[in-house]
Image (cartoon, rainbow, N blue to C red; front, side, top):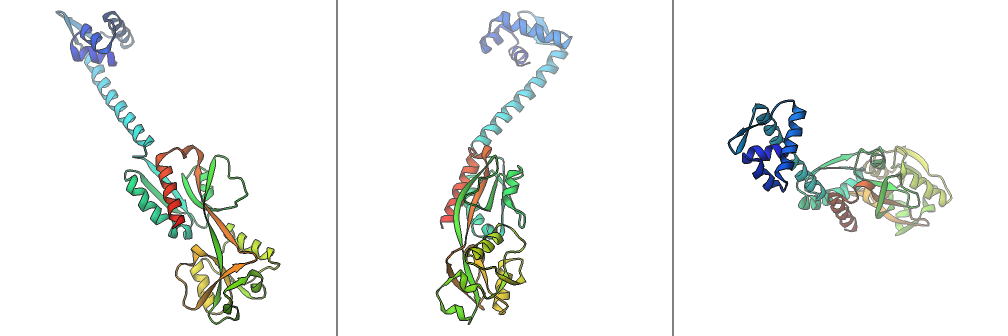
Length: 292
């Protein structure tokens, strides 16, 4: 059809052959094959040139539209390869979202203003599962450092987020600058990581390593609420540093040791998107935000 368009545009088989780099015989053969497929004549001879029949004009118009669409598609693919257009689906959990996502997104948009970011909080669901299922391109998640990531998923470590003890102001243990985790063994606890998940598992496993099971007397759905219960004197808790946010005036915060619980925060990425310029830029921005 593009050969026919070249013939119609120039009005000559010979001129079209010169422009396309073919012989006139090859052009004539292609036009004849197209006429056979169409079942109608496509060109009328006029003197030394040709002009399209009604069928020839119709196919030429369609050929022009097809060419335009192909050019648009090639340009769109080039933009996508260079990270200039498209959509990036990002999932995150609350505390990482508050600390890491905003500065990373600001830096990303300075480089890729044409890429649409689909940002979504998945808590209490695990953001990693969204990448594994193909519903997200990048996810901030808590992950086990020694565990293999799911097939088709790459997890890049961003930072270790240490847990800190949160005590009521005036508590006897507040006199110590650093607490052994076992110091909290006999205390009533506020469960700051409910429902169960990787963050809660880290707390339970650390307490087990220190030789005790926490006596949970209050359940809280988030870290700020847990601080409120602690400030009211209902118990103690431990909270990851990124989860502290604004420290409640009725509590004090102390470092932990023996062991110091830590949660590893990483960016999970679909392996087939690792070469995308947009993904690489976002990962770089997340690394910078984590380092800050």
